[in-house]
Image (cartoon, rainbow, N blue to C red; front, side):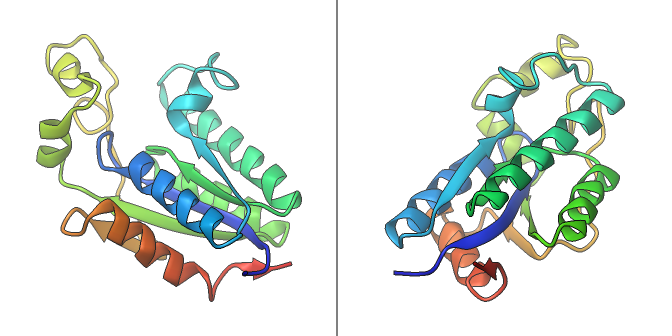
Amino acid sequence: MFPKLRGTLWLTGLSGAGKSTIAVLLHELLEQEGISSYLLDGDDLRTGLNSDLGFGERERAENVRRLGEVALLFADAGYLSIVSAISPFVADREMVRVRHKSVGVSFVEIYVATPLSVCEARDPKGLYARARTGELPLFTGVTHPYEVPESPEITVNTLRTPKETASEVFGYLLNRITIV
């Protein structure tokens, strides 16, 4: 059994990239190894804690800030937080990274690099189709920008299965997250 790991794994990428699927598999893998982790899915938090936020740039920044603060609360309790959220702007993700560093909590940015065409073909929620018709005017990747991470700790792509990707991330983090 591994000791407790403390920190945040931040999966970012377009809608339909596979962030949530990878996060769930990673969470299961960590739990099987006795590592306490907690999933913070951007979609789930937007239906509760962040339900008061829209999709303008300031609101997106606040959404990311809140996700980061909740992740820190879980880290303080000895959990490894797994955040899966589009989080489209470099500056917002960097703000979370700096905040984590300021309190001594590890932050690992994981870019799920899935091409827009693949995400759009998957379109699990029908969002791309709605964005293309103008029904969703601020949709990341179509009518709203997504800024690719400048130097993520890990970049994963769709050439591997989600299970292989989760295993890759697991292997990476064992040597890099603060052990408490």
